[in-house]
Structure formats: C-alpha cells, structure tokens
Image (cartoon, rainbow, N blue to C red; front, side, top):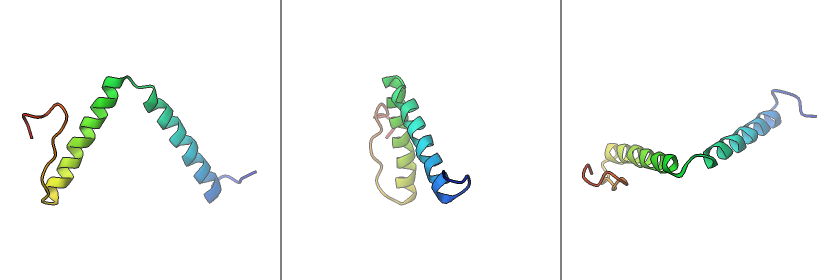
Length: 65
C-alpha cells in the first residue's frame, strides 16, 4: 500500500487524472475536437508573434491570418 501524500501516490493520482481526461476528450464530438485544435493554433500564433516569428495559418481563419 502506498501512503497518501508520497511522491508515488501523487504520481499515481496524476496518471489516473490523465487517463480520465483523455477518456473525456476522446468522447467529445469531432466538431469540438476541431475547435480545440483551432484554439491551440491561435494560441501558438500568439507565442510565435511574441517571439517575432511568422504566423501560421489557422484552420477556418484564412482571411484573418
């Protein structure tokens, strides 16, 4: 038995939480998954712009980039 609060217990809790999150995301409709990808692309462009790097196209935003 692993004692609560130990690094091993925290690691196992993190793995269980990760499994639950992945299962929840896997159940999302395809359209919501695409929306998440588009949002990540927008966030990546914010980081690219702040680093002075060229922006990349965002799916569905061709007129904005």
